[in-house]
Length: 243
Image 1 (cartoon, rainbow, N blue to C red):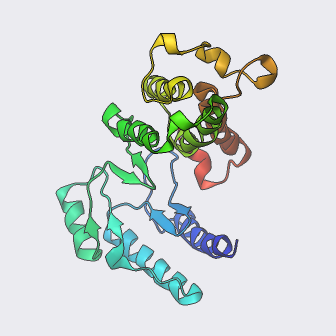
Image 2 (image 1 turned 30 degrees about the vertical axis):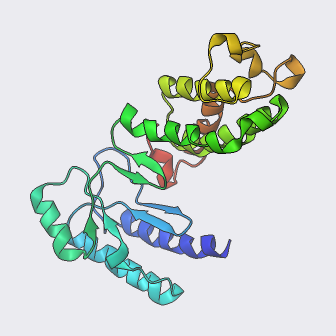
């Protein structure tokens, strides 16, 4: 909580600078999300111009002097998005940071301005499948597998489903892994190994199911908060983010 209170000051400084017109608009559309804070990680969105970069460095130095949280620019990264060669030269002259390619991976998730491709989603599916070999499913009861599917395999997807739009093919592939582990304790299973249809498995226990979350409904529930935030906080920077 103390960290959040302190970092909110940095958010306020960048937001006020943007509202005062000291930072150039990011787009002709009403998208002015300037800063993203997560734990000890900060991402600032800027136009690749000298005035914006110098002002941001001054704000970071001022914040560091007041809070003691100094920014290590040498360990930071620059991710140019649709920048020209002149813009890249400006960034390299003013910021002693490593310049990385975009799209990239941020906070464990693929980040892109376009719809994520199958190649970008595949590592997430592979990570779920890689959990199975070490669980010794042959020594588990079927009830134990239900617990593993619901509270480990499914829980691994909460962060991903909240931040990205899982495509139907990815949901189908993940359901295949969950279903196979439940009935066989393996990565793959044929139809004859499944005792109950998967839609029935995903029903609530009171309705005759096993209480395993339906990924389609879970995805909708997790992403339903974004329109709510946009409606309830019209003056916040994140309220203008496209869905």
